[in-house]
Length: 240
Image (cartoon, rainbow, N blue to C red):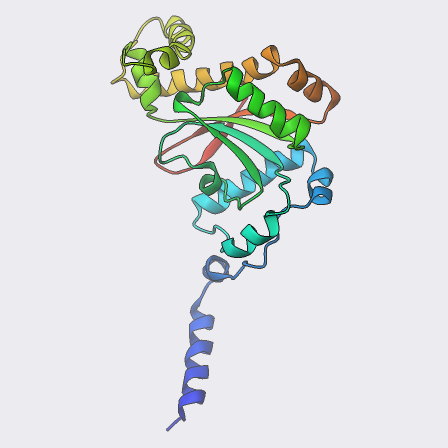
């Protein structure tokens, strides 16, 4: 009869032998991940920043998100922050960018507001995130079945929400014009088309309304893109 230590070792060997490489990747301890430093941030190009988000979303969608040492990241990031990207996304509870893009503390700026709209306050935040703090990428992320978009289609009026939804109304009109009608918040395809149009308009708004951000893009120091998250899969598709 095998003694207990030998039996345990044999069990571990058999378990490892039965695991696929993907299984092992899912359970790999990556808690040694380090937060970004000023030098590491400076070395990242806008194109590389976008790829980092794509890679992170792929990990999230496939269940391979990194296992992080958050207390360690708290300590390491306390002296300063050097995020490589800024993300404008919806307030929806299912679209948290840190989770969806599998990023840790100090890696991204996150601005969240219903309908992922870009107003002067968001623009000011993005100017800080890029011109001052050094982020190389701005991504505006919309999502499927967006409640704010549905509210704009239905012309909901409710306190301060009325004014917020007014920012999405131009996208509703533009999408309806292309589709030849169909303004119905129960029409899932129309809702998602409006959400995508809204993202594209917000991306345009960012460089149209901010000279600072426009100059950064022109110099090649910054890239501004739009994305659309499918709530059913978690996948974010980059909008062209």
